[in-house]
Amino acid sequence: MSFQRFMSIVRKEFIHIRRDRASMIIAFIAPLMMLFLFGFAVKLDIENVEMAVVDWDQSTASREFIQKLKNTDYFIDKYYVSSDQEAIDLIDRGLVKVAVIFPSGFEKDIHKGKEAEVQFLIDGSDSTVSKTALPSAVMTANNYSVQLKTAEMEKRGYMASGGQSGVVAKARVLYNQEMDSIKFTIPGLIGLVIQNITIILTAFALVRERERGTLEQLIITPIRSIELILGKLTPYVLIGFMNFGMVMTLAIVVFHMDIQGNVPLLLVLSACFVICALAMGMIISTVAKTQLQAMQMALLALLPSVLLSGFVFPREAMPKPIYLMGFAIPLTYYLEIIRGIVLKGVGMKYFYQQVILLVLFTVLLITVAVVRFKKRLD
View (cartoon, helix red, strand yellow):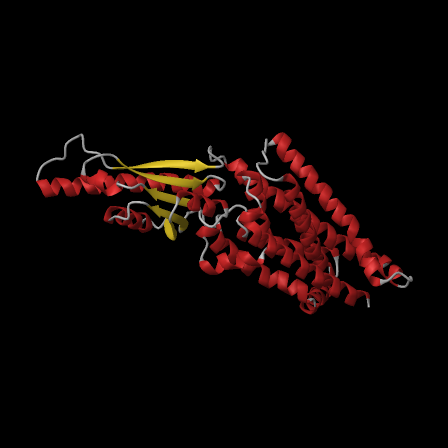
């Protein structure tokens, strides 16, 4: 073995890597990006759960209890509303995960030594958050009761009687009453699978055509560029729809997923998401020069979807900059849509903003993909 010949090959390969911008990004930028995203996004401690407050009592005691909830760092009092139904609507729209309701006479019951009830409505469709919110609410009520009894003891100078009652948290879990993590995970997994398969299939197919030279053969035919683009992409749209049908059937039959809402609406919005994923794959295909690069770029694009969309890790627990980055990912909106329809049974009234943003993303990505693809053809 000649060391000189060996080193010449090594130098040649480093020159190729240096000239290949995509390889340089994957080699040096991707590891930093992965560590950055994992370090900030993978946070299992639930904090800053957004909460709606219905305070029928409007008393010092109710305000003290709200402050106790905020002091735990688990809850943020984002909305103050005037009825129980308004609080439920906020949960349906995904704007809050918890609602706390103080009945009229809450403070009077405390002063009379009666059991003062405070009701919690918890969004069970997000099992990760609900499993933390429920015990935190009960613990806060218990701690507040101990504080009230201790204050009464100090005031009177003797032990409080056993008949004295404190604050009792009455929790009601909405939608996924068992807080079953499978019911929360499966709808999100459907969105993730459909996105990943569609992106990878589309990116690979177009790059493979270019590598084989068959795309250039089509270019010299009388076919117009728009006809070529639509003809190439239509099969992958149909495959995406078929994949969606298969994974939905599997989820219903094997995992017993119940669709609470409008099935036709779910199909239409899922079709929009499939087209959006196809556009992302098409954009990758216009950048990648080889199938290996296409795979690397696809994986690089899919990683933020897993971490930042709310598929596994609650977005509420993420730092603000990372949380805001999640809004740039189409899967974020689709997960809110599919979970809203499947788990909550809500309609367009409750997630129309997510639908509008998903459609805008789809139109934007399709436009960019077609323009870049036509430029490649020219």
